[in-house]
Image (cartoon, rainbow, N blue to C red):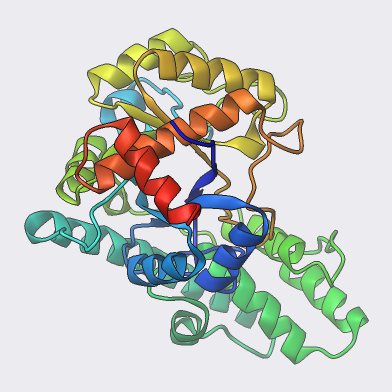
Length: 368
């Protein structure tokens, strides 16, 4: 292969929810930070592919076309097994890597994707209704318009984080003084003071989400089972869209813990193979370098395509260039694993069948 080029294969955009104001901001940052391969990875959405492709072309960046789902494995749920959602047994995040562009998804699979996206949006609309009931109960003097949130803050996919942002913006508009804003947050949080600085938008939104929209909060609405397609259905949709079903590993958390499914790496690897997975990914800021090298190296040796990303699925605007939890950049070992995986995905995306073909495509795009 040619020169190792830095890759970020998992970035959310405003077509679902992200820290970025738009696709152009994300790609400008990638270019400035020397990241040459970039993967769009929105929840339930292919809507950003056209803009991603065009804007990557303008910047000589190589685009990867990906998608993310939340699925359910009934066997793991029945066994009480936590997979890659540490709080909900059986609930399993899945990505699709290297989907066809122009988009080829149609028929039954396109309808299934549209239906699960609509149910996800509907769940947030129900949450918005409960939030407004809570605002009325504390005599806030304003409500959050779901239609305004949809039209002004989203590009079709609506997440609970959009509600948190809408409430923060409404508070900023309603109250002029910091004292009044802090007083309101204490009321809306049921007597709990805001811990974050008012000028830290991301932290304020995270507190809104944690206090009001998550389990136990006044505006929490449990997700309908219809929002979670069976794992096998998600794999079929990804394959029908031309992509590679991919399992996202959490690996070690800040306390060094692993989920039930991932703690035994060899067993997890064997189970993934039996379930038809040959591709995995990691969000590198979650993990230590040592754990990431061990997990990613083992999985690559076992024949898995391995890619890394940053996610950017929160309000916090972090760098595009990848790093681990305990280092400011990826080790050379990890950079090589990530680039090799990107070459495989690039080749697949183009209908080719070799790492060298993917490498050539990337090198021609990025180094011209």
